Image (tube, rainbow, N blue to C red):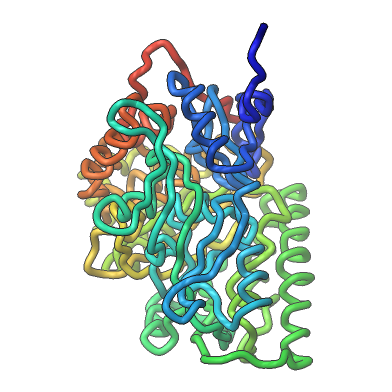
Amino acid sequence: MSSVPTAAQQSEDRRTFVNFGGNLTWHAGCYRPRNEDEVLQILARHRSEQIRVIGSLHSWSDLGVTRGVTLDMSNFDAVEFGGEDGKARVRVGAGCTLAALLDCLHATTNRTIPTLGVIKRQTLSGLISTATHGSGKPSVSHFVTALRIAAFDSHGMPKIFEDCGGDELRAARCGLGCMGVILSIELRTVPKFRVRETVLRLDRIADALCLYEDHPLTQFALVPHSWKIVAWEREALAGTGIAAPKTWLFRAFNVVGIDIGFHLLLKASLVLGDWAVRTLMKALPYLLIADVPRVDDAEHVLTQLHYLFRHEEMELFVPESAVADAAALLQCAIGVFAGDATSIPIDAERRLRAAGLYDELMQGRGTYLHHYPMLFRRILPDDTLISMASASREPWFSFSLFTYDPPQDRRNFYGVCSWVARAMHALFGARLHWGKHYPLGAPETARMYPNLEKLRQICRARDPAGVFCNEFTARVLELRSAYRNRSNGASCS
């Protein structure tokens, strides 16, 4: 007589996954565990296979891809408060989304989390695993005070670990899924705050960089083809308030005019051709409401409906001391790829020739017209092992390249990304966002992160057989599964 299968064994389902950007498709067995016991059962049952956890599928890198077993942790969405005053910390289930956490915090307390990324649909486990960040503060990962994780002991048996300090916590704060299955996350909270924002039109990067001393939450965009600077001058204000009519008008304009209207114009310009793209980019700085301050709750100022239109992004990080030079090189390179420039400054040419990248840039002249502003944000150093702002004495600036081309039409965009990533890494020590387009390999990655080997050691201790490894971890981190008879991958458009 056969035994009755466990709940975990009954719940496996074969599924096809497609990420938000449409650039990755894969097939895997999927579980949606309801409690910690089921997670441990799944780990025990599949400890000779690959296991990866998915969040909101908003990543563009193949970080979450597996041909083995996928865990959907959306049932783990509880929110509990703790700390000395009962509110100073919040413990969140791994599958809880940022939107749900903020709704709970704001409905039951007068607190929020210290920094916010642009997207609220991300799960908390996905958000910290790739060090999601805003501007003017460290990433969300920096504010994690404890994690509860299901992994393996030295004998390969499933076990739950509580990471509350030391290198284990620093590793788990941005573990890329290699530390095990995150069950819950404890975060610091801060009193809810508002943000004063004023949109400014500027002519020079230097003018934007001067804003940060008095307005640390500022971010700015370099607009291609017009080469104007649009800055969102921002500073935090204590307390909360009742939204005034002006506040509601700004909210409506940002949703209807920017999140929806501008992106509809962008999609139309891509259909009409290069002339329309250039026209839109030259008009963009004048489509925004400039020089008029707005004050609103931080959530409404710092987040966007970034998911309404499918796109793909590569995000790079350079030290603050290099951001002006990096932005200048980026402007030159975008001009060359667009066919607008035939040369670049002598110093940049010399450095690119020394890195073996100059001829490749010139060969790419006229192959790609970039069609989206390049957003710059300032991130303070993190207390993690491998977040993009880790192991640093100075802040970092991130900047992003976006494409709204359909997945099958992104080949030339990928060529630009590959060159930009290699050039920025060679000249300025740039790092890449783990969850976004990642064209670099293990040698470059090892040079970016002095604590990478320490992370590898901790991951191997938690995962002796490499169950939580996949193609991305092998290619980028040199963390491989011990099981040689399995393959892993994804079909990439």
